[in-house]
Image 1 (spheres, rainbow, N blue to C red):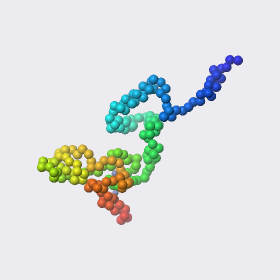
Image 2: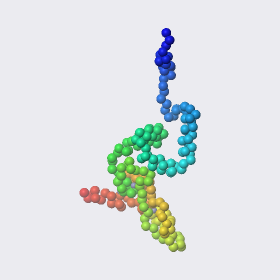
Image 3: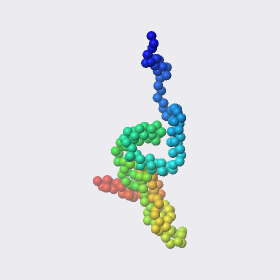
Length: 186
Ligand SMILES: [Zn+2]
Ligand SMILES: [Zn+2]
Ligand SMILES: [Zn+2]
């Protein structure tokens, strides 16, 4: 009796069980696949890090829910999205930043979340030129009429005092900022 195609296929499947490839061992299945990798690498190698970050971030809200899910799966494999990221977005703990003294949720924290403005500038004592100014908080020098290009500090909010440089005059301690005064009185 001639075996049916299905019967012939069965032993083959047993000899070569399907292996689900992981990211570390995923082979290039075809020329097209390796070309796709080159396309991605070329794009990554030819974009400024800041531009890449900005464009990526701006496009997240434009993606469909299923596209975000798929993207997150890939990002988890690359180690960019971590299990801790999932925990953080659900964390409703109210935190107090020991640098700027605002309260925040960790899900809203980021590399530009915490901003400390400069203190009032003074005439630069080391310059005879009128209008040369010095920010005594950090030593930043500028000129009257120039836009201040950066804050005295920009970074992440923190609940760890060890991360805060209280040496600059623009950064105050909780005691100086009287953060918990009302709480103590209550
Ligand atoms: Zn400053
Ligand atoms: Zn802060
Ligand atoms: Zn405080």
